[in-house]
Amino acid sequence: MLKDPKKTADEIVEWIRAYFDANLPKASAVVGISGGKDSSVTAALLVKALGPDRVVGVTMPDKKQPDIDDSYALIRHLGLRTMEVNIGEITAAFAKTFQENEKMTEICGQADLSGPAKINYPPRIRMSVLYAIAQSLPNGGLVANTCNRSEDHVGYSTKFGDAAGDFSPLSDLTVQEVKQVGTALGLPMDLVEKAPSDGLSGMTDEQKLGFTYAELDEYLDTGICRNPESKEKIDRLHRINLHKLQPMPAYRRER
Image: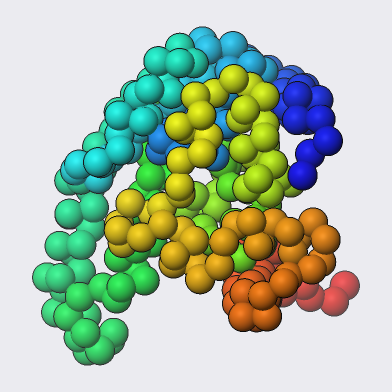
């Protein structure tokens, strides 16, 4: 847990400013707004660092998003520029392309995309949307990654989807620390304390993972996990998802 959440928030704000000054001094930040705590805290830090005129918040419902009101509550609270891009037609066309491909059954052993593929292609489409907007801004844009340390540790993200981005303000903060920073920034508590979910399965992230973020955060902070079953699950997820945090392996020839 953070000893001084306000100090940490101020340090992240200065880090963001320095990053933009060193790369694209006039660029805007582009961030996907889901209505959850991570995108809310990231957006608040960006607004504090760059001002609302240099932050573009993008909502990306897939046809309908039950909690999209939370996204717009945050947008109103921060006063940032916003754009809604409904990806429903894109995801439908994507799925249809594979459903109508005669080679699917021959090559993949089934006539449709697998369950994991269906879960992961919408986040990758959303990231493509963010980069398309960033590259279309007059002074350029840099895409914010909104993942936190806890989710990164167990690989709870989509590679080249929400795990992507140009810079990552929250990657050294656990879930509990992100909440602390959100509170220090004065964000509405219903957004800071909102139970994270993927919006697809009907379950919270903790229900899908099989352990609580409190357990995971304590394990990351102290190296102690009181529940052996949770420890085993955390260690396994970290091991099989570590590739998401590492650079792409590349062959290097001898010279």
